[in-house]
Length: 348
Image (cartoon, rainbow, N blue to C red; front, side, top):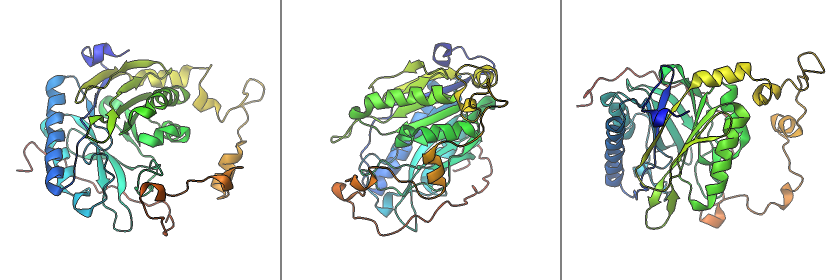
């Protein structure tokens, strides 16, 4: 169900708006400031557009565009003016928001990060993209894992970014941690359209979760992003989908209570449970082992593909990036600094 896009909100519903944001060109600090103001204006539009909306979601690259520019003067930080503006916009419009930033990294390449901010201006989820779209993207691989947070109206939210959604382990990890609504923000262009659709559906069905996914939209004069906002039900069917109209806000009501009902009540196709309880009809509790070689090898640091030595593209040099010399440092413990709730106009 989508409640006519959330117009008819039920007591346990969560109304989400996906913004098919016009792809910007951001080259200077002034451009960055202007695009920040534009995103904040669209937060206000989302509130005016639908009084029942709980969460407005902006796509990956909403702030920076698709240039892959890593210039320090247009990188962001959690305590910078861009994030402060997003926090204030959520307070002023009494709405949750999901935002994209390219985050400065003093130890290497910037991170491609996402934030979920509540209607009091507190950052509730902070995520760094785990799987940059290599070899095209220069971003540092995420090192904070896949967080899940409490969302509006008792929901559980996770955020994965763009190429993350092509790896089934990402949505599975989000659901394993309790996510009922998996947000996926992206900057994808038209050649990815088919893969976008089927992975959004598969991520939903395989994990009994809603997926709410949106790309940038329109052209920046070089690239053409596709929009394609999409809500998928936990049975894998498409509830609502947008097209290619820039700045359209595509909405749906999602029902996390029905996800919880399916996860506890389904027998057939309760796949996220059955993964670890194989054949429970035949053996008590099912087989509770790890029979998958790739999982065992990855955990042991010996993941090797049979064709791995023949893979030809293993760095970004073909896209103009110097071959890296640094090694990955491993996961980081980065507890989000508690932030006091904001009040309307507290930034003034």
